[in-house]
Amino acid sequence: MSFSELQKQDVIRLCLQRKKRRQFALHKARQQELLNQQMAHTPQLDFEDKQNSVDDVDLADFSLDD
Image 1 (cartoon, rainbow, N blue to C red):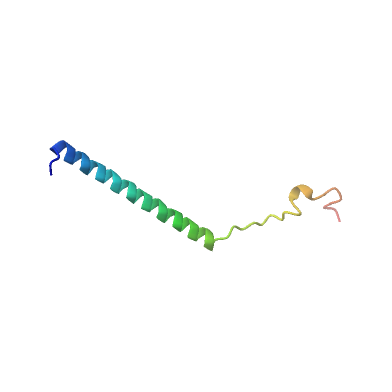
Image 2: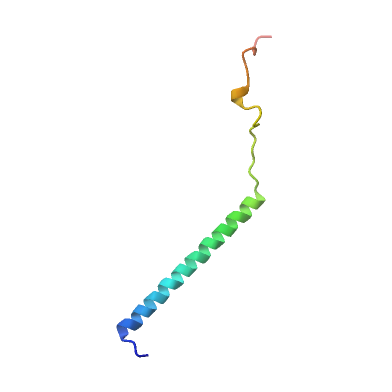
């Protein structure tokens, strides 16, 4: 109660900044949680055969002529 009007306005400004930071942190946490849920329900599909990649295939004997 003993603060000047300028000090009161400054306190309100600081409270609003803190509220915005808190809302942003909650928003980011929700986004991260949704991303984690999506990744848990959508496994990465890996169709490449690690043992027989395209670079390892020898096509020297291959012919289209029968």
